Length: 203
Image (cartoon, rainbow, N blue to C red; front, side, top):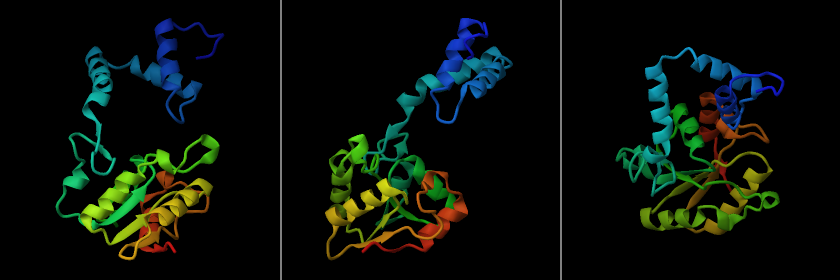
């Protein structure tokens, strides 16, 4: 909160905590704190419990890297999904963006980031080895590269093409709908559906 405004320290501490969230500035943090003051004691207690239990109850899927409430996520446990098609994304948050489009019915693989030499992130820092293992074990026929359309995303896609290329695997790249330099995390469902359905060969 503003340095010149003398709020109680408890409000200042909570507001500073909110500003650590993406997209939350000082004024928005203030509004959130003031809103919480209108909540009942019981609502605040439950909110606190949800926060404290978040890391305990949300795990990383041992298969694909998605968020899960058990060893595997709901998508990996779903026998109706097509395990021969894997869509590769940078982060777990992007999975739900694609799921909202309702156009993809295969499995996913989360890299856990993107190739970014300026940030010190190389291919060895991504979950590429786990993907390679899944390709061997599941006889995957198509790999959809759904990394971003910016420089780092394209570099990551190129790295995957070079590393995972083999004769029996079709690699495609999401196409129209995601603007150049765009991040699919912020795309709407219709845009993502267009990008998935219009995918092209990654070669």
